[in-house]
Image 1 (cartoon, rainbow, N blue to C red):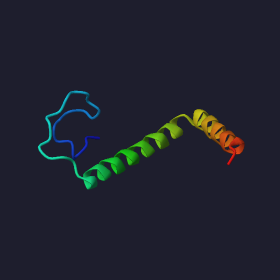
Image 2 (image 1 turned 90 degrees about the horizontal axis):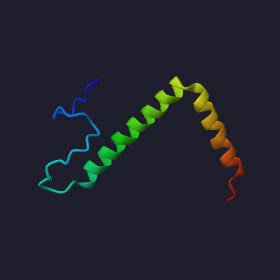
Image 3 (image 1 turned 180 degrees about the vertical axis):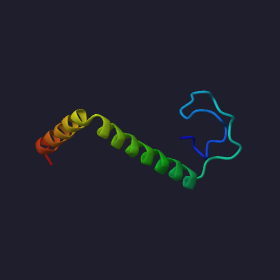
Image 4 (image 1 turned 60 degrees about the vertical axis):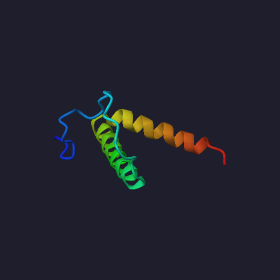
Length: 72
């Protein structure tokens, strides 16, 4: 599904250098982009867990083992 905010027609994640911005990014813009990234990351992880349930279960078991053996 195309991103409605991506009007440049380029695919996300491109490594081409972009035009230098005329004004520095504000904190609000940075937080907004970070929140969007974290939402997409969570969606990607959830999708991966759904399509690879065995690997997801193994990862949960490893995480649980790490938490059990962690020393405060």
